[in-house]
Length: 240
Image 1: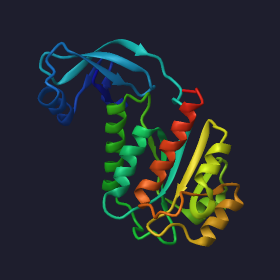
Image 2: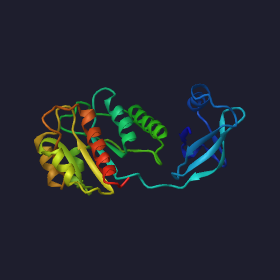
Image 3: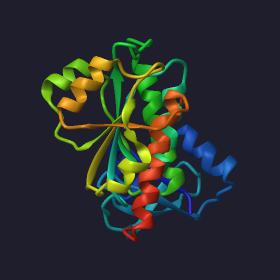
Image 4: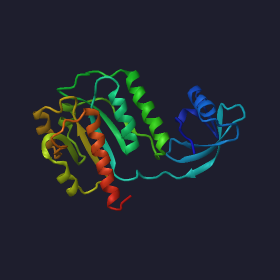
């Protein structure tokens, strides 16, 4: 069934007003008619059933379909250096489908992009919402504010996790020893990777440096591949 994620401001009692884009999506793309049922992900992370109105411009709530649920598996946080072009958008889209629950854009020493416009952030949030709707997640991903790596290091990092770097232990070794935690972080550098001093600072905080092997990975793919492998390991252990 089609699922939409709706902001709190558009809930009017038992009626939800649709945006022009949602009207086009439901009526033109998905060929839904008045009276058809749609799933709605509410601001409280409850999934509701709603019926398309006669004029196709609103949804009428029928009732809750499912109560809020915990993330299916570890709640991954992806600390990803901001990338050139629209490649960070790809990270948000695919990462949401793979189970990343929080994205933190990083500015590092080797990051080419030094500023992120409000329009770019809105684009990330839109793509994250659409990806969550498509894959049926129980909640939208969180897109954190852009952080400078040195500031994060200065504040400390309470989350366990790995920093991806060629100097680290082999991924195959690390994943065999991985004990799934409710919260797990992956740190991915920009094109060219983290600077050696950045890796040293992160490992000093308790993160472990992990290598993906001798091949050179594109910056937008490395973290996603690691998330996919970790989720696969979690499922293989019969925990999902």
